[in-house]
Amino acid sequence: MRRSCLIRRTIMLVIVLGAVSGGLYYLQHMDSTPQAMQARGPQTLPVGMVTLTARTVPMQPLYLGQAEASQTVEIRARVNGFLESRHFEEGGAVEEGQLLFRIDPRSFGADLDLAKAQLASAQAEYAQAEKKVDRYTRLRKSGSTTQDELDQWRTAQLVAQANIMMARARIVKADLDLGYTSITSPITGHIGMAQKDVGSYVDGSTGGLLAVVEKTDPIYVRYTVSEQDILQARRMAASGRTNQPLVDQITLSLTLADGAPYPLKGKISYTDPQIDPSTSSSVMRGTFPNPGGQLRPGQFVHVRVDGINRLNALLVPKSAVIQNPTGAFVYVVGEGDKAELRPVKLGEWQAGQWVVEDGLKPGETVITDHLMQVRPGMAVTRAPEAKPQAAGTSEG
Picture 1 (spheres, rainbow, N blue to C red):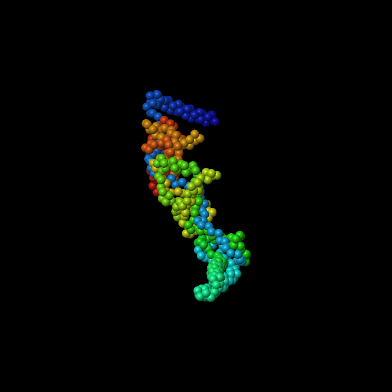
Picture 2 (cartoon, rainbow, N blue to C red):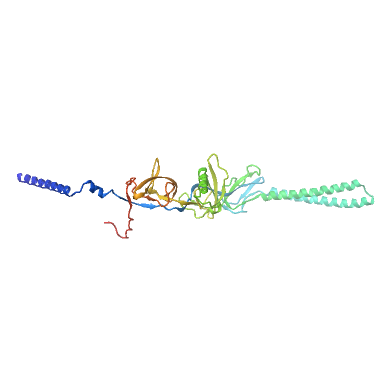
């Protein structure tokens, strides 16, 4: 027992002596004078950097839009009567001129026959009056009749002529009314639900709505632009920061609600000349081809405006920007490769980068990483780019 305690004490003593000897050796060989520390100099931090160059970038503003039919027609009855038949599928496609409804035509056919009979009667009266006028004209020349009798037959001739005109007008109206019993689609599109069932009585003056047909190819997409966006766009164009394309040079692109892009491009077809005071915005409308019916009225989409470019823009990566309640800042490599903290004014967001409105100039170098370690006045150097790793290899 005593022997084991003696061995442990001997081992502890050897360890302590070794530690003391190592410390003395380090103190003797370490150069800790102020001159030596100054000779080593401050630490230089390797960081990622990007040098700014002015370039042209697309602005592509994005708005929320809603699709609507390019043409909406209410199908209404123009004559009174009972619906005899329906010739379409609710919610389906219809063609221009396609028969949709038929109103019982029998009473209107009878009116047409009556008008034709009245025309024949008026024509017969006119023929008789015309013969009498010719006869009494010869008798008046020979003095065998009076002027009053001749004038009476001339008046009868004029009355018969007027009756002919009235009968012909009745024929036209009766023929129109008979034609109105067959209700056709004035446009090609899609028809909604029938508002009246077969057998119902329809009134041509009130309550005559039968269905609604909407034209969806092409289709409209309506979106609103705020007053601030309009004013900003005008200022940027006036100052030369953006180009000024014509309306027919601007194209519209759509993104559907599920994130899928719509394959066909559109054009601006209407710009509201007024600002809505209740919303402080203006309505814009684009026209899109819709041959497959992929877009439907009422559908919400995102509208992207293409064709407006930002000129001489300076872009910095998102990782280079420090944002806090006082504003946005970046670290710029200044004289002597020292980091300088610079306040900047950010513009729009462009594909993972910020457009800088103010605070930077072309040719300046911005630090893009290690921002938590960088301090103003710290010496920095460009970090070496990582070499791409060969396929099939991995770090040990």
